[in-house]
Length: 192
Image (cartoon, rainbow, N blue to C red):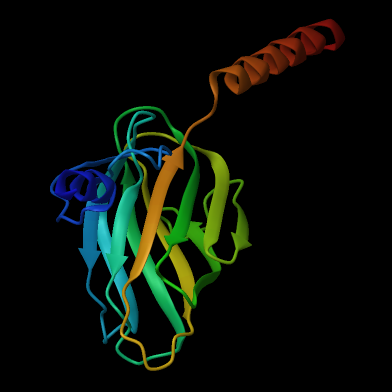
C-alpha cells in the first residue's frame, strides 16, 4: 500500500530546481518542481531568470506559488525565462492544477528583451489555463512572461500549483511551411 502511494505521488513531488529545466507536455511523467515564495514588495511572484528547454519526453515544469499574503485579489506573476538549447519555441502553456480552487488566470503577455510583445503573439485565457502562441523563438532568446492571477479564496492560505511547458512546431507543420515558401519562390520567379 505504501509503495502504491509513493508511486502515485511521485509525479507531483516538489523539489528545488537546479540548473536548466527540461519541460514537456506529458502530464503522466514527473516534472521538475520549483517552490516560488510570495513577494510582498511586488504583490505577486517572480521567477528567474531560468533557462527552460523543450523536451517532448519530459513532464511539465511544476511550480508551487506560495499563498498570497493579502487574501483574495489579483496578483502579478512575472517569469524571466531563456529559451534553452533545442528547437525554437512557438507557444507556452500554463495550467493551474487542483487542488487550487478559486485561482484563475485573467490575462497575460510575453515580452522580448526590448520590452515589446514577442512577434505574432496571441493569448488564450480559459480560467485555469493560459496559452501563448507566437512566432518561433530560437534558443538563447530571453523573454519575460507576465500574467495576472485572480486568487478568490477568502480566509484560506493555500498554495497555487501550476504546470507549464513550451511546445515547438510539429514536423508536418514545418514541412507545410517549407512547401508554401518554396511555392511562393517559384511564383515570384515566374512573375518577377
